[in-house]
Length: 302
Image 1 (cartoon, rainbow, N blue to C red):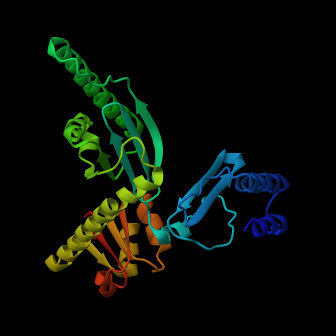
Image 2 (image 1 turned 180 degrees about the vertical axis):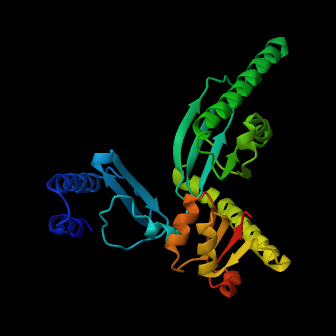
Image 3 (image 1 turned 90 degrees about the vertical axis):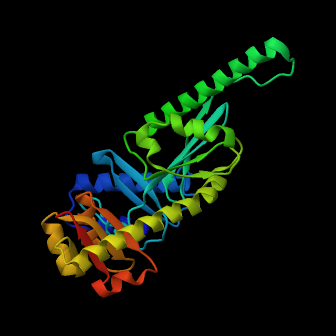
């Protein structure tokens, strides 16, 4: 891919000398990052790179599926191959016990650890009597303060880009208290609980534990979107579009609320335009419901 990109830069007569220099610098940076192991590609099945030194842009996306295409030189990012995969929702996992909290976030099965919170919470002792009672109250207060601080840190990290769902892993006696401490914006996104070691679980173990919860939530959202589509068509309203032509008209009118596309159907332009309009996009796999709609349909806002 790098060789093809280098030849493309060399042979493109429409590029100015300054543009060619900038593009060569971008390719050199990518080659250096790949060569020295600077890119974290663990768990990725594909990769997308957007680079423009003139725009101070160098972004690498790990993909859940492989993509194949030639390098593209353009004034805007070329995202068509990504739309065939579909947008990956961002999920988060919070692991918390009485003294440690860990925050993991990422798309689907690519969660990464973002935050480690540690507080000095004393352990119980067995001296008994009045001293033990006071000491236990102090421990309980420290633990409660730790849960509160962990919830505050989680909201501070997530409020600018709220995740699609949040999973919590905590000892049974703490999990309700911690969830109650979460900001309402996060609490309404709670999607399940994990039975997992808080302090010693690896990133891979967290991803494996979270995967079935994320898959079930994704399935439920697709079921709801398909049910809504069937309801609108059954009621004979104008709040649904069937087939590529009708969907494109609705997108032109900015009426699309939810776009549903069968995986593999050539609808990159429709997906890109739907995302630009902040519509929900579902790329469906192994679901026969869209076949009668020509493999693409939409629920409309009005």
